[in-house]
Every structure is written in C-alpha cells, then in structure tokens.
Length: 343
Image 1 (tube, rainbow, N blue to C red):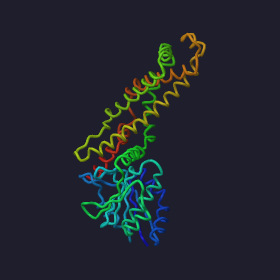
Image 2 (cartoon, rainbow, N blue to C red; image 1 turned 45 degrees about the horizontal axis):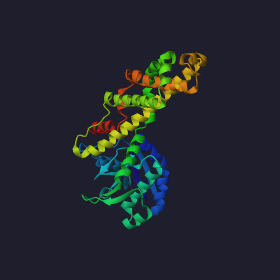
Image 3 (tube, rainbow, N blue to C red; image 1 turned 45 degrees about the vertical axis):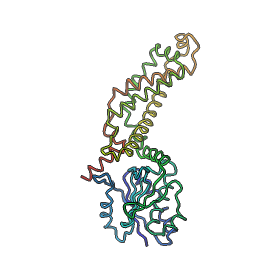
Image 4 (cartoon, rainbow, N blue to C red; image 1 turned 60 degrees about the horizontal axis):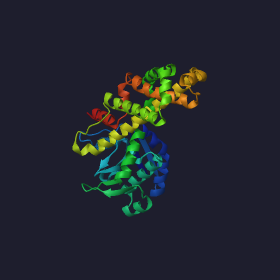
C-alpha cells in the first residue's frame, strides 16, 4: 500500500485538500493500480531565511507516520522560478512535492489541485513518458531543474501570472475581511446621511452628469484604497532584487483585494442611503427644490454622491476594529509571520 501524507497550510489550502482527499485516493489507486492511503495534516509551512520553503522540517515531522512514502505540501505561498509561476516542485530524492495554490487560479481549483497532486506523484512513481501521456496538464508544463534532479511544473508567464494574482486574491479571502470594516461603514454612513437632509446635495447631484458622478465615485474609492495601503503599511517592498517580480504580484493581489472590500463597503453604503432617502424625502418636496418632477434616478444620484462623500469623509476618519486584521490581508505579512514562527 502506498501511504501519502498531505501537509496543508491552515485556511483555504487545508479546506481544499479536505474536499479532494477521497477523490485523490481513488484517482491514485486507478493510476497506480495499487491501494493508496492518504493522510492529512494542517500545519503552517515555515520559511527559511532565504525565502525558501522549509521542506526539511516537514520531512522531519513526517517521520512519525509509520510506512509513509510520499509527502505532498499544499501552501498558499505564490512561488516563482526563472520568471514563471511555479505551480509545483517535486523533490525526487526526498519523495516530497510542493503545490502552490495561488498558481491554480480561481476556476475549478479543486479539480486543478487534484490533477496537479496526481501528476506530482506520477512524476515520482511512473516513467516520464507514461506520466506525460496519461496526466498531461494543458496550462502548465513539467521541466527539469538545471540545479538538481527536481522536477518543476511551471505555468506560462502572462496567463500564469494573471492566474496567480487572481488565486492570491482568492487566498486573501476578501469577504472575510469585510466585517472588519464595520466601523468604517458606520462612520461613512453617518457622514453620508447628510446627503439625505441637505437639499444642496440634492441640487448638486441633479446637476452632475452620470459620467461625472461615476468619476467622483471612482475617485472616492481610489482615495480610500490608497489610505488603507499607506495607513496599514500594506505595500510591500522587495528586500532583494531577485524578489521584485514576486513582490509585484503580492502588491497587485493586495490592491485587488482592497478593491473588492471597498466596493462591498461602497455598495452597502449606496443601498443604505438610497433606502433612507426613499423613506425620508417626500417626492413633492424634492420636486419643489429641484424645480422639476422627482424621479427614482434623482434618489439614486443622491445616494451615489452622498456615498462618495461619506466614504472619504467618514472612512478616512475612522479606526478599524483591528489593524492586525487588515494587515493579515497580504501575503507578505503572512509570510513574515511564517518567518517569525521559524525564528
């Protein structure tokens, strides 16, 4: 019987591995025509001072599993090698493989993860020609390492890079951080509520064209994203020139994650102010102020302009529930936590 241990980072990696564990066993038994037992362990995979994964530590800890032959590591760390996203690396001599979940993207991640893990084991247990014929991965290619006998599964530079950034945003779990913006939403709603009670804002919103309102909304969203980046020190800088490309991916994923969070905040604020305006502002009174018949679009314009003003005036002056929660959005901060743990 082939015994396989899957060590997964806490959070999304461990959840995904848990979902495919039984399928992984079945697929390996079919491919290798031998009984397979897959065990799973959740553990923060640590990083060495040179920013490489501490594979030796995982290998050492796996010695307690009797009869263990192969170790698969599933990590949320985006990996790069020779300018290309590194989906997986097989350390043939150690019977260890490392799979980077962000490089799998956001579509059919469980199926991609299953296919990559099976392919990794086939790289260790099957002849290369046989593995290529039966388990070819169309969006990435296995290559040999120039430094050793390891095998590298690398994606294309452009499509793989875009897929990696999207996967990093998914790994950041932006919807889990939205509740942490509750104080910002409360402050922004309080500031935006002035738009419901001050008819000068009604007149201004009616006079502005849709394109100008959209521009104001975009500027408000841009300002709060920059504020969050600077105020919470979320923008990473490479410590070494060799990490510049990787840090660029980190920063792109952070900006996109913040964009999703702020859009959720802004959308919630528009809905709150729109409902408040519909309840509070009498159509006849609005018509007398605007000098024309009040329409639903006028209420919507008021909500959009007030939400923009409230987002800037309220959210900038608010303090979040925990700065640490916001900073943990970024891969860079989570990687520093791994290094601190190792130290």
